[in-house]
Image (cartoon, rainbow, N blue to C red; front, top):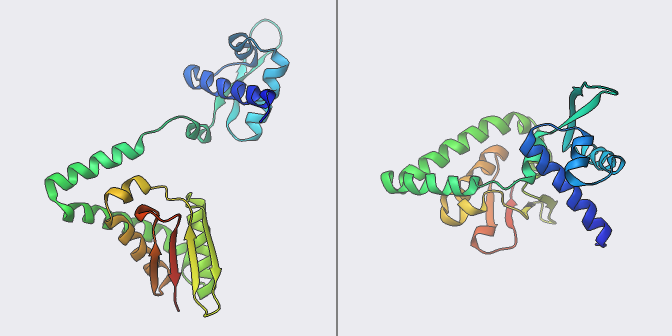
Amino acid sequence: MTAERKEQGSTRQSILQLLRRNGEMTALGLSECLNVGAVGIRQHLALLERDGLVRIAGLRRSVGRPSHLYVLTPEAEERFPKRYDRLALEMLAYLNEVGGPEAVDQILAHRRAHLMGELAPLITGKSRAEKVVALATLLAEQGYMCEWGEEPDGSYLIAEFNCPVDCVARRHAQLCAHELRLYQELLGMSVVQESTIAQGSHCCRYRVFA
């Protein structure tokens, strides 16, 4: 990456941080804060708007030409540090302390039932192959970096190269067991879990049988 590209990326990140702190700002306001020309700021804002990270929320009317007010989109929130993983781990640790592993298993079963109700209508009624494709697509949309393939023996492989809940799965093995059961229930087929990221593999790998 060239120094110029790094500088451009740094400027756009600074724009996002300023909008996060101030809620809404004009291009001129950003220009003054960052000591970058207004034309350059507008170019950066155009790119951020294209990427779905900022949007125009309205106009600021003053002497002269009205100015657009820029704000962050919900998608931009992903650019800022979050500690949902720590919160989830602390809550599950407390649950395990007061209720034991059975209490943790119960809450994970509730999560599985909720996902079943949410995803089943998107898979039900499809052919065997279509169900596998639909499940892999849904998982990919949820950040699992999911791929699928058909084997010569007629089985299917589903591979997840990212686990959005890896931090929890490494502490609570029940989570992987519930995900396996969820896939079995959604597909209505036999599914075997061949490897998991939580156990040190580079991917979570599932084999789906007829």
